[in-house]
Amino acid sequence: MTLLTALLLTPLAALLLALPVARASDTPKPTHAANCEFPAEWFLYGMADRNTPEPDFTAIKDIPATLEVGGLTLSVKATRLERCRRFLYLDLQTRHGGVWSGRTAYLLTSIDSDADRSVEAGAGADSRMKIWCNGQVVCDALDTHNTYTEHIKHRLTLPLKKGRNLLAVKVVSGAQGFMFRIGGTRELAEQDAIEQRIAEDQPLALIPPRIRPFFEPELGPEYSNFIHGCGGITRTRGGRLCVLFGGGEDGPKSWQLMAASDDDGKSWTTRHVLREPRTPNGFTRNFREGNIWVDPNGRLWWFFSYSLSYTDGRSGVWAAHCDHPDAENLEWSIPERLHDGIVLAKPVVLQDGAWLLPISLYHREYIGLSAPMKPEDYNIPNDRPQNRAFAELDPWRMTNFLVSTDQGKTWQRRGGVRSPKNPCWDEPALFEKADGTLVCLIRTRDGRVETTSYDRGFNWSKPVPTAIPHAVARIMTLRLASGRILMVKHGALQGDNPIPNRTHLTAYLSDDDGVSWRGGLLLEERGCSYPDGFQADDGRIYVVYDQGRGAGQILMAVFTEEDVAAGKPISDRCRLQVPVKQTAAQLMKK
Image (cartoon, rainbow, N blue to C red; front, top):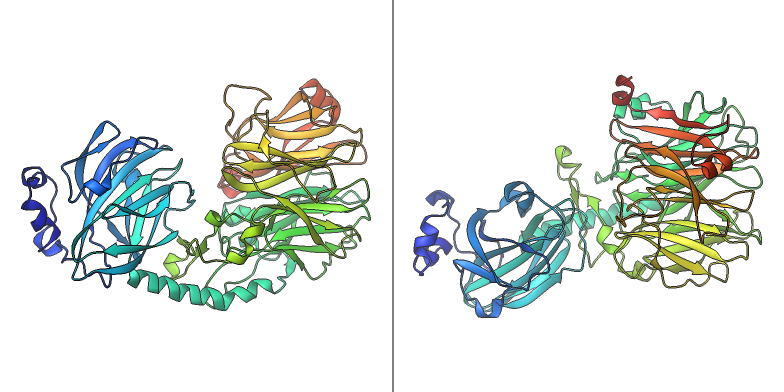
């Protein structure tokens, strides 16, 4: 007996006859539980709020005409999941009324089994989900944020009984997605085969990549039409400005580019690129984050993150240096892998001379790989199951601090701190107070939290929310030669909205080691992100950031402490919104 036939024999017949029904040729056969090939026909109930009390599925034995949810009566709508690569997939965002964070829908279907048995399945959602089988909770991922909708994040076991089994799913939308995906043992076996190919290629990400001269104009933003500010800016002793930025995409196919200027930013030449070919099994190699820095000895350092595809669960922080950064032809050392994780900030030189480098190892929900099936599918990400990739590294999935006490010859992990609530990309911003206390501001999905170390980074206090509203984005902090602290952030110091948008990038000053802030020089009013900067010997402050990314540009701001304190340009050395690198689409606007 098919699912629809069984339902038409119930009191729901009058209701279901009015619902869209598949053609007879499309009607699925009863599901064979040994393969757990899920039916495409499901029944959708919604919408409700995320915090609305859930139905009691122990009391529901069949597909109901309506679903009672915390005093709400949700009507039913027949819907069909689509076959997307290996899994069944439902896009609630485009087909069922848009998306905003916290929308909740319920999906129900039936599975027939010829005997009592347990079968393995996999499921994923954007952003959260919970699954019941015959009233028993088999997966509760309501507290787990899933970044990408295509991913099978969770494996689960369905305890099926002989006969008809009721499967219920709660799907909660995120800020940018409202989707659900499910597959059975056959689909998971195919994913396991991908896992094997990943394991074969994984060791290649431990081989040092090569920083090479830039001879491929097609990799530049003028041709790829994408630019990303996951990099930074620095200046050599000879006055050469160097900027690091991302190309390709903000994803698994990212590469890094370094441009230089010998005329204080009036003109720029792309000098080097960091990009490697696909692995033998077709996976991309990702160089998405990094920074560039001149150390106290005058050497130019290139710190970068290297991962198989978007992030393979381990990634890697690497570093190379150039001993003569003012030479016509720059020669880089062989990159050295410093630690698992990613890097986005510059090292901070502590008062005792040690170099402290904040990095982070991504939290488990951000693990994602591009699993190639055929060339046109290379850009479709497919997660490694959430409970499998590099589980031995889970104790270090946090903001970590690397230290070098021998001028960069060796690096060791000194300490670390994990955000207790809603962790995100971390993107730590670090500065040292006059008394040697270290302060680190960490990105979460609720803005920024602050943590403090009184022993040079070995131990850190429990992170607490900062009093300063800020977008869920990177910020920049820098101790200036005057002793003041510079902070570049989005928006005002106070406001009703604790998490503003990524607009109004503004520079502030602190005279009391970050206790209070003043000034407010607006660097960029439009949407922008990822500021990074340094202070030159003559006191000028240089900051770069991206504006637009796709069809966007990297811009530079040059200003003084006096400009920041006044809240407007007052010095003749202030230059704002200076183009560094632009995409073709940006250039066409002019």
